Image 1 (tube, rainbow, N blue to C red):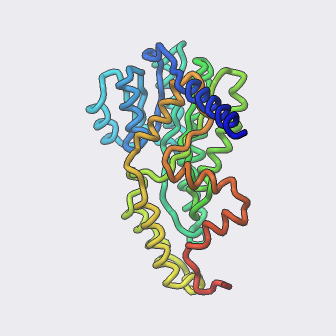
Image 2 (image 1 turned 180 degrees about the vertical axis):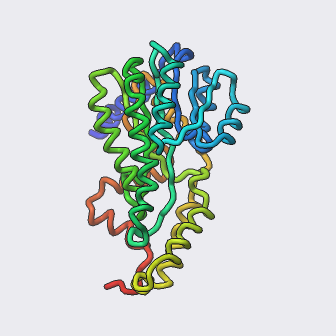
Image 3 (image 1 turned 135 degrees about the vertical axis):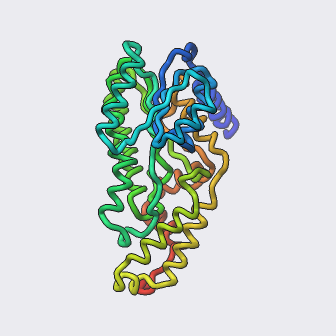
Length: 318
């Protein structure tokens, strides 16, 4: 009884592997626009696509990042400075892209630029703390997409979003998780709208990888500053032990990172070059084996798993 079922399952997996292994040809003349190329996944993807012979338009936040990337890539790759939270800067970059790609359009738009700080309890933060993250990760990403979408439609190309495993399972307070949940929702709605135009939209949901965004010292200093700025009555409610436990928990989160960052950029490359790209990619064992499965659990179970080892406030009822 089980043998036929296993045979059918094996054939399904083989078909899925074969289907996803098909890669488009003649991509060397295609333009790809990537945000957030100073470091991390965007920087690595820009180098990979450049080696592949694609025409990369890599935007960085800093001159230093742009200059360093140019030294490490071919003369075909072009760079530009872009602050995605500045609409004038986004509009200017969109005109620059339009001038370059012309009637060919833009094959790939990779929305990778992001900010991953302020991992702290929600009550410790202000509206401005949330806005800072949302303006980069969500509103800036939407602004870039809207300004370049007509060029992607012209090429019947691909749009890729760097979300997070924490866009499926909210692990911490602050604006990061809401911003990534928002990216997921925006990408889902856009994918359905663009289907009739032949544009494919993919979402990358990485687990914890070792990048400048996961630097422990930055997160620790932010948490310390939040605690020091709290009113006395809030400090009393949480207690010093909660604060110390939060420091240790955050350290564990940032230290348990994978150095295999190429797993993320490989997913991005597949989304841009495969005949049949996936809708969602989950690079990282933690994403595949923990975040993704737990996100499908009943709420009572996922809450238990996330709360059982979380810091306990001094005024806790349990």
